[in-house]
Amino acid sequence: MNMALPVIHEDMSDDELDKIVEKATAASAFLKAISHEGRLMILCHLVTGEKSVTELEDLLSARQAAVSQQLSRLRLEGLVVPRRDGKAIYYRLADDRPRKMLECVYELFCKED
Image (cartoon, rainbow, N blue to C red; front, side):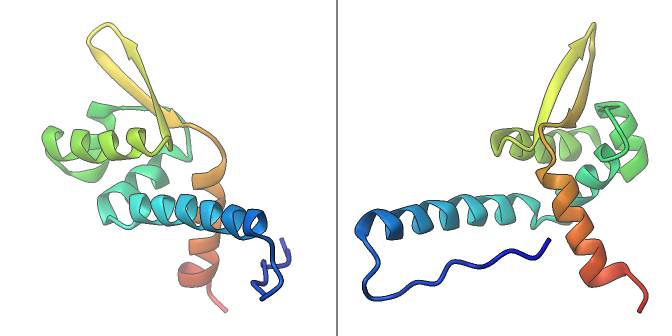
């Protein structure tokens, strides 16, 4: 995945600059959403498939309130999607962005040289 980064220059049109600012704003919101250890771990678990809130509590060794708070933020940012089945609520990744981001984080911080 080798793509060219945008280059901001003096003769750039307002529309071009506005598009870059819009993308930077979206990227910033995404990075803020994943900047919490608990949210990052939730995404790591959801990469393997849908999980209930109870499953996530067990996997994270965390209280229901803490897990629900982090899921709420991830849902607000459009990174996870809930599904209700009776009293249980299940979550899955909304799209492939978290998986791509986790692959990048793994490459930067976890992979052995």
